[in-house]
Figure 1: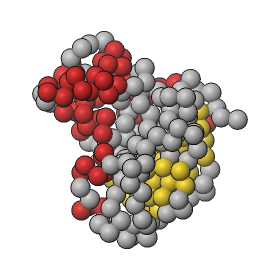
Figure 2 (figure 1 turned 90 degrees about the horizontal axis):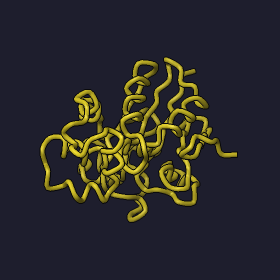
Figure 3 (figure 1 turned 90 degrees about the vertical axis):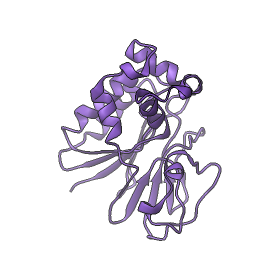
Figure 4 (figure 1 turned 135 degrees about the vertical axis):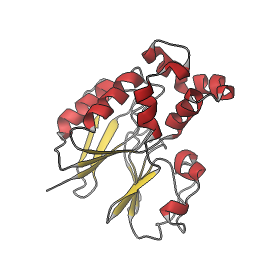
Length: 218
């Protein structure tokens, strides 16, 4: 039976992503939903994006855009005023992985990948966003800033008007545990820090977690 599996914020942690995919073993009929923030903070943004491009050839991959990804895209497209803020936000690690100090020099294929990332995705029973949502608004009417930048740490929304369960990232759970409100689950469990990269089978509830070095959680 096809699975829908969500993966939390990766933040350049390629070893964690590889280990998690080895545990999940995506099949061609599965849908993998990555919740954004592929870049910054961790050591191998370049490797993460390469791996996701490859993964998209192996199964159905839905890669949502994260706020960090949007910042890199904006810099790639010439919004240089963001540069120094972005470096403090983890962009220095991204540039190091590409061997450049110029965001516009990242491979065009990587910018194309990020540019194609949608802001949300939904199935019959779930919807997926990077950041947050307004409970009373349809997904296609949500403000872009809410979907990318708003955090469930700062504002916990109520159940969405659609009745679907929300799967979100962005708000790093430094306890290492998934935030489960029943109608909302945040699976960003702080991989780039001292936590875990999480993958959740949204129908069965099965959870996989590995640390940034790829070691599975016992």
